[in-house]
Length: 273
Image 1 (tube, rainbow, N blue to C red):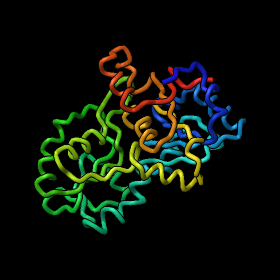
Image 2: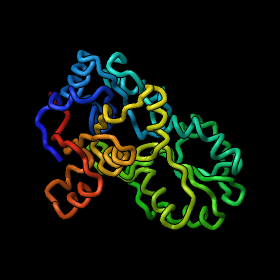
Image 3: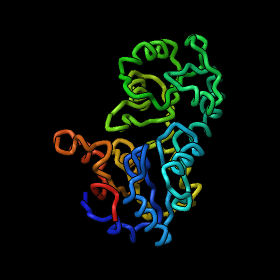
Image 4: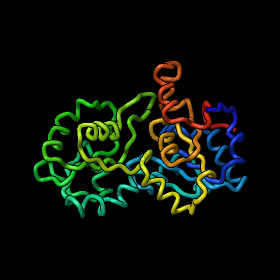
């Protein structure tokens, strides 16, 4: 892994830049000005910018949030979310194979509306379970009873946001991916579409007509998702250190095994020119 002090150091080597959003471009409440300047610089260099998010919301909601934060739509060529890929595939992967009746795991009314879900509170009547973004403050224990129920009936679990953790207002909270990973470890069937899983990358390659993977750079703060996805798809990656793993940077016994496993090509403290 090569530590760099300026994003400019790597720009000339690549044509396509896949940016994570939360923790890289913004914190959910305000944009990072230095990161915005990096996007502007890429546009001046005629590079292609793709925003790739594990948000469980459809892409249109992600784009609206970027606008609310002050990002111009001219600063990116394509935006895609895990939620959008899940929405695109739910009929093929879930409805046709298992049925339409959904047992929701802490799903908001907004998510139920976006996905047009037919929900039931009776797990024995459900064909599948679904989890997405979670409200702050929940723990694995809050899902123990749910997991016992859906395991008993061998329901497949659709996870619209595979992130393990989310950093919100300086607080780390679990996300849907933590529960999905536990269900998978217990032997359950899980459908995941965002980073580090292949569907969201294949969508990007098709949309942007990318054929030469050596010209693609992944930029993200999560070793588990952004950098792991890059490695899985054989893409070079730039790890943003002051993101989701910031509290672990001085704990070498925790961070070094992750770096050895996911092997980012470059690292930088935060996105800056």
